[in-house]
Length: 122
Image 1 (cartoon, rainbow, N blue to C red):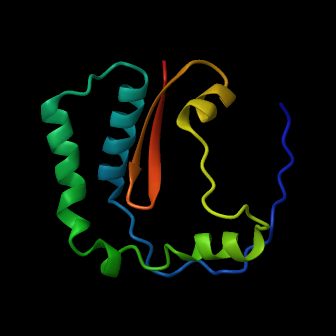
Image 2 (image 1 turned 30 degrees about the horizontal axis):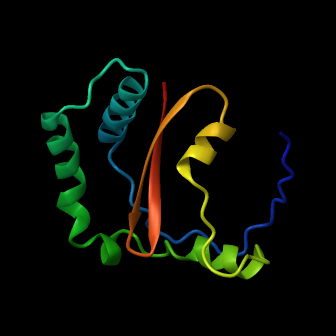
């Protein structure tokens, strides 16, 4: 399968003050994610609680203090990326997994007006 990608120039500047985790915390999360994806670490209840806590703590004020400007990429895509089909554009996680090289395990859920998916190479 081949694809043609049109790369458009940036028109929305990056907002200042992008929230970044400390270098140490970022490296811990990257190492954790690599180990989990490679099967060197298991996902258990204690790990799930720990990770959830890391995200729940800043969640209360995230929209106003850290995630400013996050709608700009979507607004740009809608303004310049069309034409889009009427209604939602949905690609099933199974279809995404089938298009990737190798074997993948996919989990997806509908949430609010949209959906999310997590794919893990097996």
